[in-house]
Every structure is written in structure tokens, then in C-alpha cells.
Image (cartoon, rainbow, N blue to C red; front, side, top):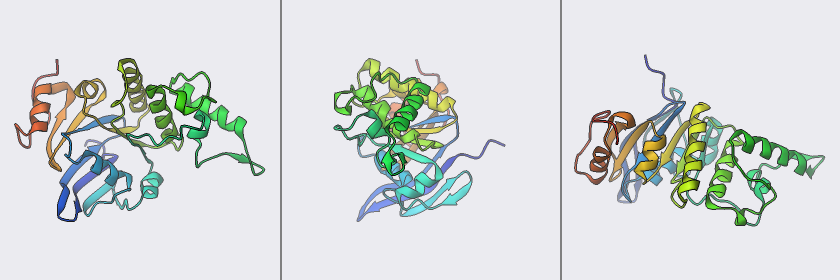
Length: 255
């Protein structure tokens, strides 16, 4: 039997008044796997991320964590399970340095005083583990490149040692080199056994790092695909609605 998914959604729906943002959505993410969530604007991708993160709970359906049904009614519920989220706006404090951002809200104290030495040591240890290159950790985040900011935001999420990581458009505002470094970091996280769910509009990025692709269209599932056996054209057709409920793991490999 295949291993139980780390995260599984069944029949998840979300309404905002008369508007149905999500309808009967299914999704699975396994440990050591990158799943890309794709779809056109308004497809429900960000709403689904918020549901899993506990910031905007589902109205209907069930969410399972390692085979057990759980209730994600607030962000703390997701964090307690081991689910971390990095939103597109990164939520960094530009006036603080790298160390200050990494430990914001989780400062290390000794005898009631901030232990700056220990926080910097742990920050450097984590960034070195992830092969993140930021020479001076006391540099204000405002002076960092877009790629460096992204890695700081991801590193901050990893301080709690999560088992699943949600990334909302992690390469949307990055250049070519910065995108490549971010994708390398995502691959490292997969190799470390994390389950990673990324929202992306960039199918080249999806091809580079994802194992599976889940397509949302108008708030509903419209296809599940294996990246290695599916053409880019099939993914695009599912996103645009040229095909409805496309079969999973169909077609040739992407060029």
C-alpha cells in the first residue's frame, strides 16, 4: 500500500456570502514531495493556502494530517501540527536585520536579556545548512535582493522545524538567478523529507521542482498530473478549461 499522505483534503469548500471560492476540493501532499498548485487568477489557489494555514477555515469538508482528521480553525492549529506558510508578501520587517527577522516573535533570551550572540549563531547555522549566501546577518532586510529576502522568509518558517511548507508564489518577483537559487532551496527541503506545496503561475518553475501538479479552475479541481509524464500543453488546457477534469498522470513528458 502507498504511504498515507502527510496532508489530505477531502471535499473542502469555502464561501464568502453568496460567492463560492472553493467547491469540493481534493488535495494530497506526501512527505518528501513537492506539489504545485496552479490555476488562473481567481481559481482559488490563495484561498486554499489560507484554509490549510488556518487563517481562513474551510466551511465544509475534512482535512487529514497523517491519516487523522484535524481542525484548522486558526494559524496556531496548523503551526502546532508542523505546517508553516510563507506568503507572497513575505511579511518581513525591512528596518530589522536578518537575525531580527528570523527570530521576530521567537526571540531567545538569557536572564531576561536578548541573547544576540546565540540568535546570530543559530541563524548562521540554519542558513549554512540551506546553503543560503548572506555574508552579513546584521544587514537590514531593506538592503537585500529579492532572492535573499525570499530565502530569509523561508528560513524563518523553517526555524520551527515544520514537516510541511506552503509557499505562495515564491518566485513571482525574482530574476533568473534568484529564481534558480529559490528553486534549489525548495529541492533541498524536499530532499530533507518535507512536504512542500507551492502556488505558482510559472510552469517552467513547476517543471523544475514539482513532482505533482494540481490544477484549480473556478474553485474546483480540474486535474492532477505527474510532471514527468504530462505535457505542458495538457496543463495549460486544464488551467484554461479546454479540458475538464483532466485525467491524472496522462501524456508525454514535458519538453
